Length: 189
Image (tube, rainbow, N blue to C red; front, side):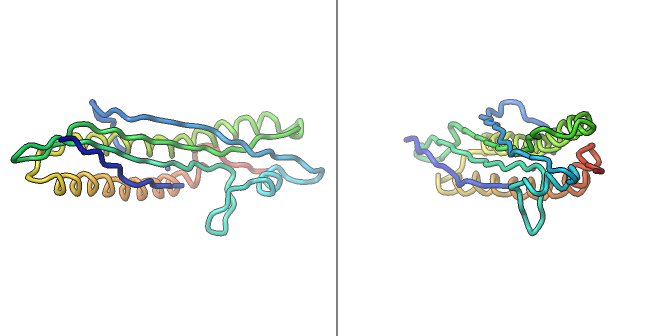
């Protein structure tokens, strides 16, 4: 008998080594918000005025929102229940500024800044991908159990534990990089 189980959806605002045999579906898309530059306005002021990204009373220039889900099937016989198949998916949306007619003297700096900001946001996506690969591998590696209920609980406990770990790692990533500042995602103007 084969059962299919789907475990919830998680949204995060995001280091493990990839595991062989983990098969993770990855979906990454970008969304851009337009930044117009008014006369006398600094570049940073223009971005802050245009940014739709707000969290905890702060405005951010870029953001990565990702969703991670896993599904698994099992085989059941008279004595045990074992994982048969695992499908793990990570879907992410990276939001970045799109500069409309920036001041000529700032074009090169903005280009470099956008590259650094994108790299910082991709770091969040890498954390999500690594977590998905690890969840996939750990669920696959579960031993057979006496009941499918126990197996299901163990699989979801592992997935949820790894999600908590990646939440902590993501906060640490932002702290370590000062939200991208140490990676060059910082404007002085």
